Length: 323
View 1 (cartoon, helix red, strand yellow):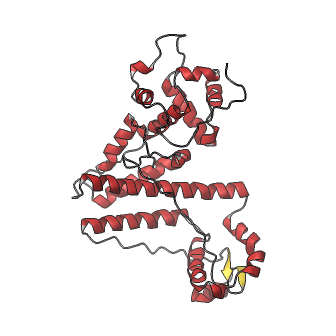
View 2 (cartoon, rainbow, N blue to C red):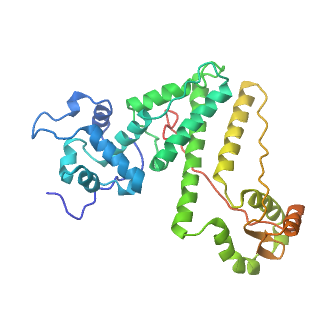
View 3 (cartoon, rainbow, N blue to C red):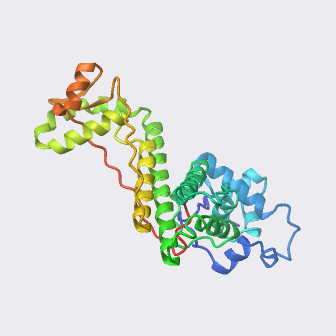
């Protein structure tokens, strides 16, 4: 009998942590993975995976426990072990099922930039629909039909460009790692606003009194100048939309350079703030709302405390399919 206090959480946010042989059997729905003894099964593996995925979508990966999943299915927790041997295998099944349901755009015959952009967009949509997937490390990916179909489809965006096989895999890995890092940062931005019950402007306003006392803009002229420009444009220390568009253009430009073609021009889409958040200005942090104050800020007489963001780095033997 299981311990009533045990919550059976997924032990780690990484794939490939379970028994390899059993996991592959379950991923490919090998009949050998279905028990031939004991009571007749009233559920299917697909139903268990769907219930776990719905729970993760609604409440996050930490909410996925055998107790919660079994409760949503109307069975006792130990019943789930008839279908999956453990939490690690369940996570692999969840992610591969998400891969199988991904939209795969037919970009045959289109220019390579459009093909690569479509791959990025497809993975962005996946991670926006399933934010928990962005937090999973796939250094040892789930080698199921979902992953293999995804990998095959995404490699086609780089096929025929003159890259060798190693370069194709590396280019795809770099693209997907970028999208995953972006998705994590975007999710963190939303979570921060939700958990603190305030937006960025409110947070800066709350920080203003202390910052006025400790910050000397003359001591950090470059940070003040650049931070002011970025903060004014984004009305925040970090703008997920700009980060995605700018980062994707950098990747396309780098790939173009590798292929020997001209890189795409970087977008210069800057939103003019008509009344910005309280960024650092000369003499301290203050709310900039008037045109005169904004012009003073843009002329270099004011600055912003820059927000720092660092995305995670990771590498997968199969191009790191988590994104």
